[in-house]
Amino acid sequence: MLSKNEVIERLRSIVGEENVLVGDDINEEYTRDEALTVKPCLPEVVVKPGSTEEVAKILSLANEKRIPVTPRGGGTGLSGGCVAVSGGILLSLERMNRILEIDEENYVAIVEAGVVLADLYKAVEARGFYYPIYPGEESATIGGNVATNAGGMRAVKYGVTRHYVLGLEAILPTGEIMQTGGKYVKVSTGYDLAQLLVGSEGTLAVVTKVTLKLLRRPKAKTTLFAPFRNLSDGIRAVPAIFKSGVIPVTIEFLEKLGLNAMEDYTGKKVPISERVRDEAEAFLLIVIEGKSSEEAFGDAEFISDICMKHGAIDVFVPPTERAGRELLKLREKAFYAAKDGGATDLVDVVVPRGEIPNFVEQIHKMSAKYATIIAGAGHAGDGNIHLAIFEQDADKLSTILEEIYRVGKNLGGAISAEHGIGSEKRRFLLEMENKAKIELMRRIKKAFDPNNVLNPGKIF
Ligand SMILES: Cc1cc2nc3c(=O)[nH]c(=O)nc-3n(C[C@H](O)[C@H](O)[C@H](O)COP(=O)(O)OP(=O)(O)OC[C@H]3O[C@@H](n4cnc5c(N)ncnc54)[C@H](O)[C@@H]3O)c2cc1C
Image (cartoon, rainbow, N blue to C red; front, side, top):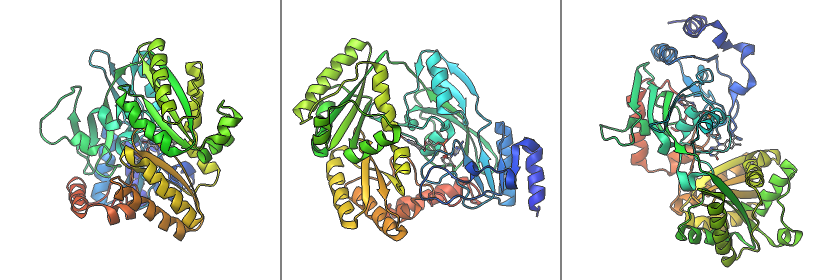
């Protein structure tokens, strides 16, 4: 049995002294992520490997000595996934941040797991490519995106992270290095383990390299902002938009409360008249891409007409792409605006698209029943609703959460669309999910991680 100091010495010998932090040297940011309800936890040691082989050695040591290991990317997660709830080693991938290859012939990028989204976007766009997954917070890492199957505002047209993962290098909890998938589009060669690891929240393996599919960069973009007298009208416009054959990149909805909070937080106002502002209760924010500005503007006009036919009070089209981006930036601040305004939790339930008005109506009733503010904004194009809950009483908050998840499940939805289960939604998953599925997930976990050293306390 090694003492704690001996373990730390072994870790130093693997990654170098400067890449092992203990005690007061552990910065506060390593104790938390962005989840509002998860308490910070101090790991015993933070380790920052610089290579695949170092990660493998760390996991091998941890497995042998039964030390819990929590993988961490950018710490922007919203479910407590990278918080070291069991102490032990916090394995930060921050040094593994190299873009290894952009293969222009095969439309592929190979990156280390610690590459942050902002750097990936810059690198691929400089070569005329496009990585369309856009989960809002650009300091998130690709490894974190893979582990949570991150989605975001462009999922309507482009899908989510898993649709761009062609291959992975991952280290099993026993320290073995596994390669799966590659630069090819089709594969039918045994179980698809890359896709099994996508969304596994660091409980099955540590991802060290990712092979990502790239697209060509679209030439033009237009944004629309459509105010409606009520949310139902706005949501009813969404299927009509899809039927028209134009698939927008983004269709977001906002309720008035949410828009006001974002405007207050950013100090910026959406340029709509006071009359429209007074009348409107809900808004759609729609982004359209095209091969040329003419095509994008043409499609935007077409979609404006659909919105007007479905009860939009007006449709505002920003005159330039830059002005459109400003509107999107406002929407991107939804989380920080809610946090700043005192939100105590944020949920990301998903329901079938057509059930959004029904879901939101039930949430409004719940809000009145509990006398608790619940503000909605979300991805109208894919059924993912983000609700900011402002409730200080922990027991009441827990009751409200349970009711929200049950309403979502009863409408054919799921507890989390993109943020994951982490430690935060564990109880709800175990209570509400199909028992056979949970049992099989437990057996898969055991097959990968027989000693339960990797991210214990998450999902299960
Ligand atoms: C303002 C804001 C907006 C956001 N908007 C969106 C959004 O629109 N859509 C969306 O999907 N998410 C969104 N998020 C959530 C967050 O950005 C994503 O969950 C992101 O994928 C987390 O990446 P990360 O690198 O920060 O991971 P972390 O928070 O560090 O970790 C997340 C999970 O991944 C695991 N993990 C991290 N790296 C690895 C690895 N290399 N191998 C194995 N497991 C690993 C961790 O153990 C943990 O379970 C938002 C967050 C914020 C703060």
